[in-house]
Length: 295
Image 1: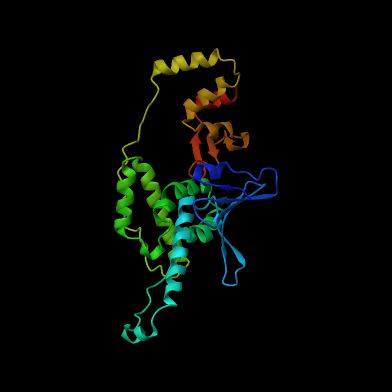
Image 2: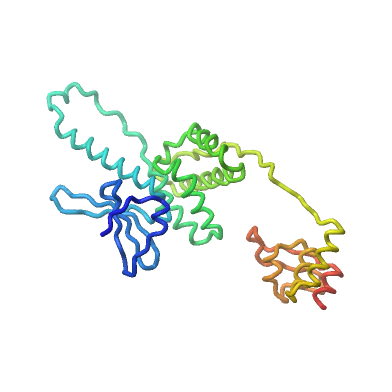
């Protein structure tokens, strides 16, 4: 059972070393363990001794759903809660009469990291084409900032701090995607009637202005040079692909994955069944395009 000083980079490079599974212990956080299976799946566990002196092992989360720094913070919070409970057992019984009656407990909700791991990721995995993009945004932005907060604890001030911090290093588009993602997470938490969640804490947070839209069109001279380079290319298909892209404005993969059945020469419409938006779209077949397709 190797003991390593785990880091996010090291964690991603670990493998089972030819075994069905291998356990790696963290030298920084006592009890933290990462189990790596031959399939490549990595899982966080926490080991500690129970009241009977026996070792117990608790599963925390899959490593692709939560970052290492968030796991360390969760373990720290668990130990703090255990220490507080232990101190309470030594309290002076005589002081109980001086203690004010307990107030109504605050509404409790799951940690954002827990909700993401146990509810959000399993749900979007079933249908969302951009699942890997969500995982990347969660691991790089959402969980490091908000993963250790309960859903009902998130404040507008937290969001402002996040935006101000990220603006120094990231483009507005990236920040906006994080805000939109968190807004969706809270909408699902409300829809699923998650305990302690009474409103969308991200709703009303304005998106940043994005000034990164660029439009660039080829000049007639550039088109002529491009056509010439295509003609002398060793790739025999370029003379069809490049003019097809110019004539339709389609994306490269849309054209490369096109099928004859998608072209209706009677109505002069090319149907692209799955565009970037996830919906079908239609492109007119010009005379030049029809001539190219029939060549």
